[in-house]
Amino acid sequence: MNVPYLYDPKALIAINDNDGDMWARHSVAPAEGRDVHIPSVVVAQAWRDARRQVRLGKFLAGCRVVPVELEIAKAAGVLCGKSRTADIVDATVVVMAAALGAIIWTSDPDDIHALIDAQGLKPAPVFRTV
Image 1 (cartoon, one colour):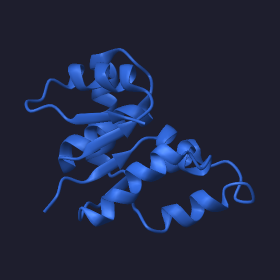
Image 2 (cartoon, rainbow, N blue to C red):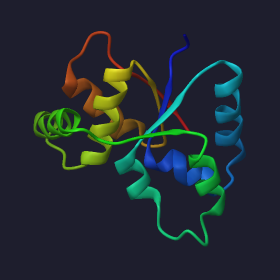
Image 3 (cartoon, rainbow, N blue to C red):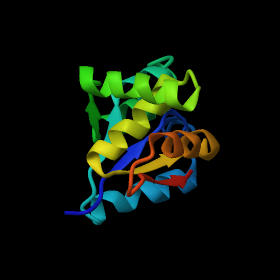
Image 4 (cartoon, rainbow, N blue to C red):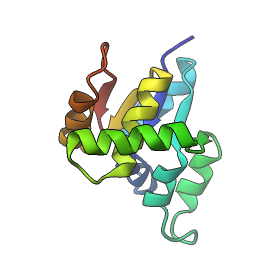
């Protein structure tokens, strides 16, 4: 089984904006047998208008949009405390990626890196820049 991908909100925005680089990266996921997971709060942060986000809506239908369960939510809150940040969406992405062993796709590498460092897990989650 291949390591899954997990997308942050800006990765979804890049998909919606028809960013060629993001589409190219995503298109190899199924060919490599990778699942794509997206925390439901990531969708909430990226979604604004179904009329203007038809592409994103179709894209999401092919992904695993994962509800944020209580234990993940608590862990994200603890991580925000450790990292002294208030971005619960990015913290949720990092916590969920660690739980799944997933590679995070982000365009916010500094924030994700700070959260990964604060999490202190070994091995740490891996991230790639969109």
